Structures are given as structure tokens and as C-alpha cells.
Length: 118
Image (cartoon, rainbow, N blue to C red; front, side, top):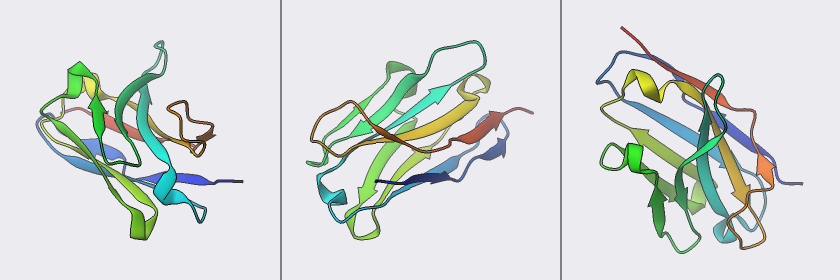
């Protein structure tokens, strides 16, 4: 069973930055496709950014130019660098990993809270 663990959330002022980390277990992490998702109260979970095993990336329009997703296969870790944060970025951020080569994660972490407020 693949275990996924997020970290790095917290309280930050508007315009600030945070870096989230997602560690996924398993010997085949290099083949995982991994995404960062978020869910704000009263909203559905939405895709924020996605990185394929090929290192190709996708972003939601709302975060393009502000967020950057990357991966370090040697550390089984995917990062989400978040800059120029806005109050509307406030949400629980989840990491999801697809270990079957697709783009529909079946392994999820518990989430990490990001709050953007002055």
C-alpha cells in the first residue's frame, strides 16, 4: 500500500510564500503521476497542479505564474512552491498519487491546512 504524507502548510500573510512537500512510499515512485489538490469549506476538491513521471506539468488557471510543482525522485517527494499567495488560496491541500500510470490518484494523504490572512 502506498502511503502519502503532506507537510508544510501554515498561516501566511497575503503576498507571502509557502512550500508544501508530499512524500509517497514505494519502490516505484519514479513511475507515479502526482497531483496537488485543494478543498476550501463549502467547495469541491479541485486540481491545483499535476506532475507526471515524465516531469511534464499542468496547472489550474488560478495558480499559473504563482505556483510551481516539482519532484525529487531520489527523495520520493513532490513539492508545491506557492508564491504571491492570496486569501482565496486558503484551503486544505491534498497530495494524490496515481501509481498505475494514469492521472486519477488512488493514494491520498491526510491534507495540510494553508491559511492566507492578514
